[in-house]
Image 1: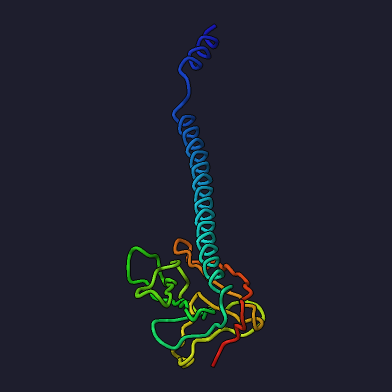
Image 2: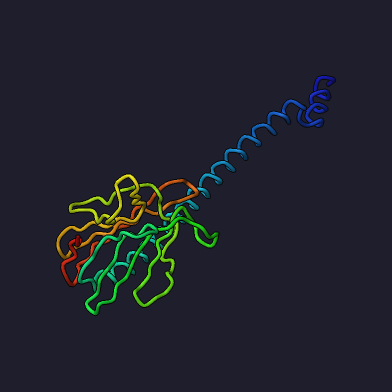
Length: 201
């Protein structure tokens, strides 16, 4: 009888301190693992959203450039600063310049921004920001459109490259910069021009 009453008393007392600490530790490990997994999932989702947003901005800019190129009778590299990339000549005698400049204003994300200016404008307008500053290439056949009047040592292509694939076919490559992950994303388009787009001397 004495042994039975002692057994009942020990059940009535509950868990020991060691048992509570082990249970608490196991709960902490499970909660930490769950939080880490949730944080990893949210970071991947955020990175995927940023990548999609960057690709959408680059695609919009490519559509704009492609519309101008479809009207081109001639395409040429440029020789005056800032980092001018391309001049598109139209049948009516007007032209459109596209050029690359370093970030100078906090409204735009760097490292570089593509600007657009037409022959009837006195100022240029930003087309797309967060363009890679490193020299990159535009994969594919044909010659890269190089800026005239610049030595190879001072030439900086950056993330905006134009490749002439045939007399009336041009490929445009934009390399966007993702500052959060320090990665680059490529967007390209091919355009058929109205005239011979071969670079003119």
